[in-house]
Length: 341
Image (cartoon, rainbow, N blue to C red; front, side, top):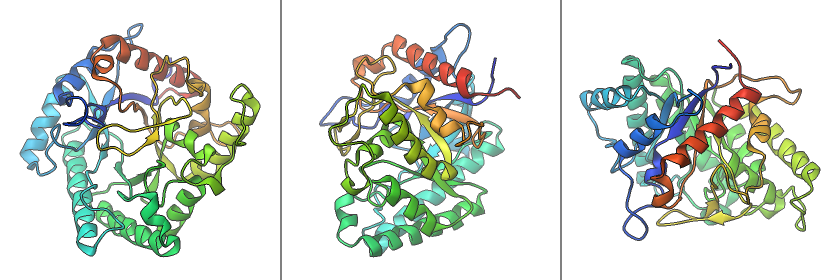
C-alpha cells in the first residue's frame, strides 16, 4: 500500500459559510473528533489542515497556547499540515493599512507554523493566502491591481522566509487577481519568489475551465455537454499544465459545475460530497492532473493532500459516514497516484 501522500481533513469547513445568518459553527473539537473517528478498512486520516480562524483558533495565541493546541491535536493521533492565514480583515486591494494587517496576519500564521514544527507535530505544509479582494475590485485597473497584489505577496514571502515557510495562493474564482487560470499564472509570475506557489483545489479549478468570473479565459465550450469526457479531460489538462509547475498544496474535492455561497462567503465553486451523483469530476482520476506531470510521472512536490468541503449543512457534517466516505475517496486518490517511503 502507498503511504504517501498523507491524508488530511480540513477543519475550516466547520466555520466557512457558518454564522449568525447561516448555521452554527461546528466546534474545532468536534471537527477533530470526527476526523479521528473516520476509518476505512483500517486506514485513518493522518492529520488536519487548520484555518487559524475564530472561534476555532485565536491568531493572537501565545507560543504556549500553540503548544497546547498541538497537544490537543496529537492526542487524537493526528499531525498538522497547511495553515490558513486569516487575512480577510486586510484586503490587498484596500488601503495601506489593510495591507499592513494582511502582512501581520501572515507573520502570525508563520509563527504558528514554526512553533508547530518545533514541537514535532507539523512535518510538512504551507501557509495559505488569497488577495482577500473581489474580482470586481481587481477589474477596475487590472495592471495596477495585479502589481499591488504581487508586491504584497512578495512582502509576505519575505516574512515567510524568516520562518522557513512557503506561501501558497489559493486559486478560487471569488478572489481578485486569482479568479482565472491565466490571471493566476500572471500573478504568480509577477511575484517571482522561490517560496511562493499555488494551492490547487479540484472544485475551484474546475470553475477555471468554465471562465465563470473570467469569461475570456474559458476553455470549455459554452454549450459543453458534460457527458463528453474527452473535452473535459482536454480542458483540465490545459489548465493544470499551466498551473502545476506552481502547485505546492492540493485539495481533493468534488464539484457539480455550479457556484455556491452561504453566510458571508462569496459565491465560488460548489463543494459536493464525495458521493454526489451530480459531481462532474472523476475525483481519483482527475487528481492525477495535479499529482502527475504532463508525462504522467508523479511530481511528489507535496507530502500530503487534504479534503476541502465547505458550506455543507451541519446535519451532513455531523454525520460520521460523511467523513468515512471522504476518507475512502482520498484513499482512492492515493492508491492511484501515491507512493511508498
